[in-house]
Length: 146
Length: 285
Image (cartoon, rainbow over all chains, first blue to last red; front, side, top):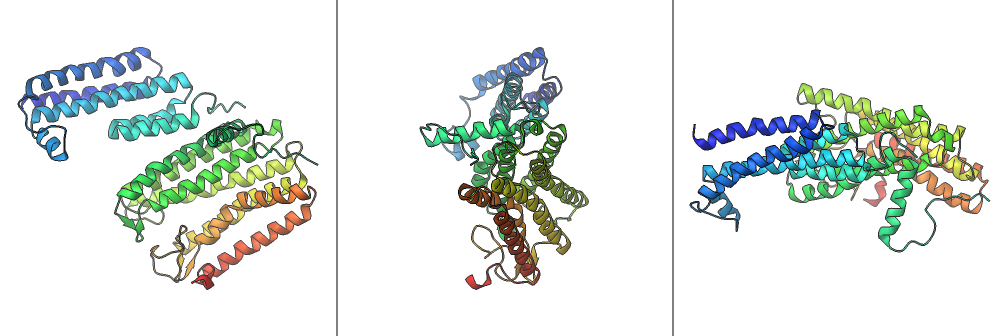
């Protein structure tokens, strides 16, 4: 197993733990605001920073075209860095969703599908949460006060 | 003469402020149903993006046409129900039974739209798709869910009849009650016809290509979705007509009964016509 495969194999279950924390303990600030919202993304950021520092200069390609990006991702080091980028930012957004829902009185049960979508398809889940927020944030809730 | 507050009054500066005022009023009347309508409304832009990018088809039309139609229809359904909730007597609006029914309906609608969107993303059909056992079960569950959330209209209509809000013109109140009840009765009747028929085409090829613009109803034979459409939208059509009547003659309830009878007859006619394998308004070609 190459070091990149090792990083990949460790990062995936760690990210999953962060997501499970968000889904099961939305009220625990240690879990949401601390572990899933900062600590795990920061850990991924650390690994990402090392990978980019060590391998970006020596890689082909760049950000300017689909072909350049494809060339960049032919490097296993930068492919796993890109994957860590997804994992870190998706989890960070997921934690933001839980915090925002908590602050604005959106029932957690409705946030969970958005978390699943954010975990699987990042921006799609983010959009779903923005729509949910527009529909049920602050004042509007299942309590249905009038 | 009774005052009918259809829209918020006062100085409204811009179209955005106008929309915000309607949104605030809808939330005030029934936040759960109104929120669900807002949710589905905001699903329309990403659905249109998918429609523009996706080349796959189901029944020879783009896979995203169906989610789009259901979103638009359910925005109108949920938005109108939330708005009509405001025509209940204040104490009836808080009724536990009504609120629970609204909650169940929203959950079932969420299931229906989620499954329709998922199946479109997979590029396959949702209703009448029994290709796998799981899809067969999920289709049956849609069939069980639809009559339940469609019944919310009649339940609200009966509640308004029994405990109407103050200051409602009798003609307008009756148009609300009849529109809501007919939505459930006619919409469900047409839905059952589609179900029993095993699809919406009668004597036409199983394709939605070349249908009536926007609606997609086949021109080659009968299409049971015509009656489904008119039935389900009774709750917009009759109250708008009732509002116009009440504006001139607040007590013209007999005229509202007549309108409801004519509307029912026309919807029934579109159903009979479809069952006889004739297209809607055959003369337009």
